[in-house]
Image (tube, rainbow, N blue to C red; front, top):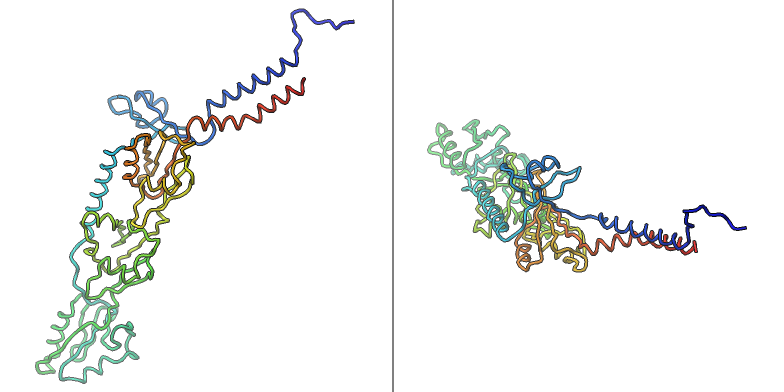
Length: 406
């Protein structure tokens, strides 16, 4: 007796099951190709200010409602950011702006050296000619505050109030005076006891004024300011010189609570002599490490990671790509190369189309800033392969199910 099959209902064959599995697999493949996995930067172009407001993009067009410039595509977590195209004109403009900033900084910091004035803790050596009894008043190293090894052990110490105690002269306020001014006062003070006294005042130990050198130098610490003005190079030399990891383009000078950044190589390029920069009492000079100014290179490069500046502190886009093993020619999309940075809390995105040979000149002259992120996007074929590699297990499962069904 044959099984009865209702009219109009076709039996489901094994071949139909296999075909259905293949169709489902291919449908999933095509759907996944529309949203390739992995990190990828998209750029978009807003058409009007009204559309920009509807999409939540800030600054998508100008005040006249004209079409906006290219932007980084906005997401729910980040707003749309204007995209700046890198070219030789922009690089020259940024270089000129950097030179202007260095000039302004140099004009603010470089000034004539100041004469040394006596302060609390300094040791003075005072000699009264034809009166050797005054020598005993200076004492020895055992009774006075110890002087530095390179200075005389004996002398008159200026107390913490800035006063000097001298026989027949009493207490003299000497803080803020030069040695010649102190000598004039001491000459007139004991004249009522001595006939035309002749004396000499000189510094025995400099201890009231210091500067501090920290960071990437061989011997960091405090340096005394003497009657010979202390300039930038003198301070570095007395601190043992720059270390191998020093970033000479990122030197911080803290003066009166204000931080001033010094770019030594850029000053030399512009003809500004750093030896004209004289340090003042209380200054802090900190030389940062090149590791602190690294940038991140990501995406389709041969060795993703961080790149550090050269010894002169400069790091161009070409330098960063070279340290990352160059662009992966098999997987990279040379049209999609981005540099992102934070400028005083405001994000900036630069885009470089590196298909043209001129783009290499742009990459060579475009200087990166600390903590920039360089990203090289992958090409469409690579993204398709990645989708395919993810879906191959699903396709194989469907084929296996079809074979078993047979």
